[in-house]
Image 1 (tube, rainbow, N blue to C red):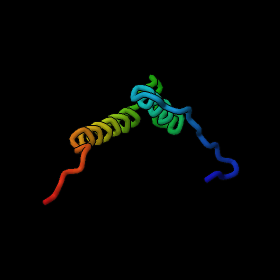
Image 2: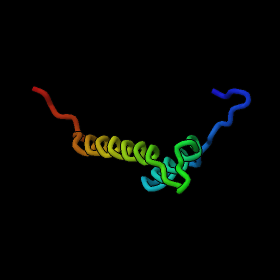
Image 3: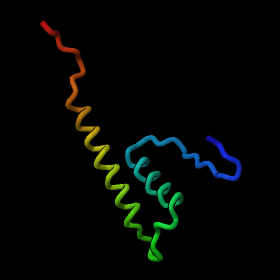
Image 4: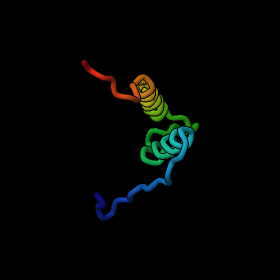
Length: 74
């Protein structure tokens, strides 16, 4: 939804896993500058990034275990 007075972030297309991680890292810091400490570190952003990587890893493992051909029942 586009609301007057609000910026809408648009990101370039991501083609690799590495680019996705980089884009998420960048976007979290732009969207939540209050999470960034004076030294540039962000424990909150790091936590979100780590959790996302866990979820992506679990999703990728599930997909690699799925059968690509249907099995016959009978």
